[in-house]
Length: 245
Length: 110
Image 1 (cartoon, rainbow over the protein chains, first blue to last red):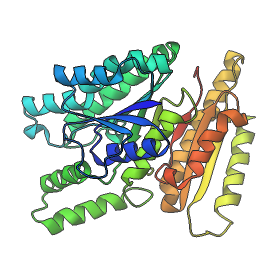
Image 2 (cartoon, rainbow over the protein chains, first blue to last red):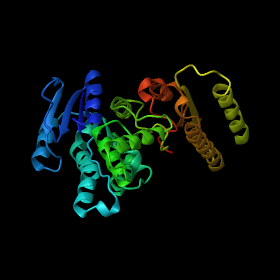
Image 3 (tube, each protein chain N blue to C red):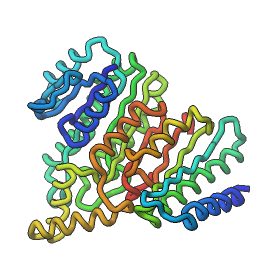
């Protein structure tokens, strides 16, 4: 069967691709960045570019053809950390478009193939979609929107033979996480790398399980939703107990 | 009657979490709340209260006991092996080690 994974070169997305291909899936992988030069699997078909671009949407439609889809995992996203003072309209628009609007586009593009395959759509939101975070309003807006959109659509999607799921991971080791944490640290007065590292260590200690998630763990949660028990659950929080649902 | 069930749940949790020695790896608890279809409104309300109570317990204990515990809730309409096995297997696996204090709602019509 065939699956689509976006953000496929990101920490979580690439781990999702590995898990799916290991289970025998053929994966159509999308990312702004080109396919990795090494370790490219035959089972992976690569599309480079933004889902905003007509050309990329066309490439995805052609790649899908008439194939039914087993699952779509929207693992793309962009860091949106910044205090209100820093949220220029352009920055806020980009954060919302990438983290929310393109997911809507992705469902529109893949719904016919998902319906044909009785497939599952998994949007990777965040614990920032469950609880507001200081200095992260733009990101929270997009991730809250994703949760509201998906949970509202879920019953209708199920009636069409598909299912809709939202994964809300907590802190997952990735460049996106560390970039956001560094910006949080600087906004709270950390003036050198040691200060940033201390902030990050305190951040991890605040999580009940005492550490960040690995990308493989978060990918496994997404794959559980995409291939696991059925049409439910709609929402899964994977946060180490920091934010519960 | 719900009070009795909650008291019994706490008793089981204490027996499992407070008296048995740590084995090195986190202890794992899954609370399953069955909320069948076809109940009266009053019965549904009590089942909903049970589901929320379980969520409260899991969220509180996940924070209280930290790294030594993984505790989650499954809400379902029928607590059958077919319904539960994929999720229980996932929660029992190392891949789910970052999931605690969560509720996995398997009800089709919550």
